[in-house]
Image (cartoon, rainbow, N blue to C red; front, side, top):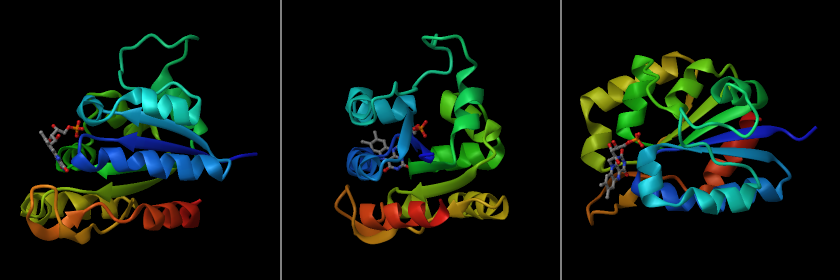
Length: 177
Ligand SMILES: Cc1cc2nc3c(=O)[nH]c(=O)nc-3n(C[C@H](O)[C@H](O)[C@H](O)COP(=O)(O)O)c2cc1C
């Protein structure tokens, strides 16, 4: 049976790059379910991912699903791997604290499958001691966390914080699966 990958997109500038990742996963005949934070929806329209995956994109904890199911529980039961990409500093902090105040963070707590976190942010944010402490917390929980790439960032600065290449993220997903 095809494996199911949950892709949780949070509100970073690299959110648009996830279109390529999702279409690459779909070409491999993986089942992909996309979930987006409200922040992510500011950067890219959920319709793009609905078209690519053929599945509803979950953005709202309180939305009424077509058939009655507690969606964060039912998706948690379906997925073989949860990928948070791009993972914002905000979302990493929520994960480290165990907060569950939107759909994606609630799913993270209900999920028992492997988790891959792919941070992407401004270099000063990434180097911030609190962000680093939060990443260590995620690693200590057994989550896989990729290191961002170094290079030119969206704001014109050069430093560490870029989303790793889509091919590298894809390879990491396949390896964990
Ligand atoms: C134009 C713009 C770009 C942003 N890019 C990033 C980013 O790349 N990484 C990040 O951690 N936060 C970024 N932020 C800040 C997040 O969007 C903000 O912290 C938001 O609360 C994240 O919400 P979420 O984690 O629920 O998606 C950006 C904000 C703006 C306005």
